[in-house]
Structure formats: C-alpha cells, structure tokens
Length: 169
Image (tube, rainbow, N blue to C red):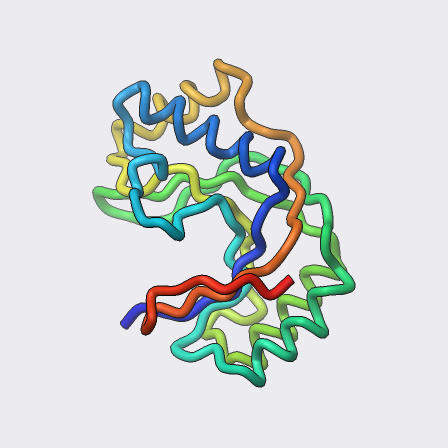
C-alpha cells in the first residue's frame, strides 16, 4: 500500500539545481528522477509518511511547519538507500534543529513508522545498480552540479488514494 506524505517543496532556484542533477544523469544514460514522468514528480524532501494523512494532520502540519518555512538546508553530501542489487542515490540534507523537532512531532501525530528517525534528503536517482553508483556521483560532482544549499519553501500533501498533490503552505 502506498503511503500518504507531507513533502517540503523547494524554491525555484533549488528546484532547478536538483533538476540539473537529474538531467546530467539522464544524459549520461544513468537512471534518474528525470525519467519519472508522473505529473506530480518534483524535487522534494519527504517530511512524514503514513497510511493516512487526514484533515486533522494537515492542521497540525500547518501549525508546526509554517513558522519554519522557508528555511535553508545545507547539502551535507550523498546518501544511499537500499541493499542488494538496486539503490537510491540522494542529496543528504542537514536541516535546522527547529525543523527536525517539528518533523518529529508531526511524525508522531500521523503515526509515521519512522518518526524520530527522519533523514532529510532529495532523491536524485532510483534503481541504480551497484556498478553505477560511482559513475552517478562522478557525473554530478565533476560537472559541479551538486548544490551546497537547498531552500525548503513550502509543503504539499500527496494522497496516493486519489493520486493528487495539494499545496498546504
């Protein structure tokens, strides 16, 4: 079952920087989020996810997150998720303490199974094979495309039941 999510969206400059990473990987023939053709596909940082994120949760999200956005987040480097034969490559973020605290409270409110263990990141490529990882990092880093900072500018709600995205802030 797909999980509902609250996601931080990036400001236009940060969005363009991440999309440039996606494009470089795509042009190099590597898996990239640029290949995800869904109309809701956009660079983002997932804040929380749960089977249901309903109206009461959205109200809590607005209260907790509005005072913390927009906010800059340092890109601390790369992070890999996965094991076995396929990996996800992402930009690892170092979020300010106030945002980390807000996300923790929000995660507990929506009963996110990962509450308290948030790893802020922006996905660059999914389904990379182990042999492609070094090349993917090299493509982005050699071109000087990896951003040093991203600005989280707003929040959106992804509802997998209706396959819709709604801006909250």
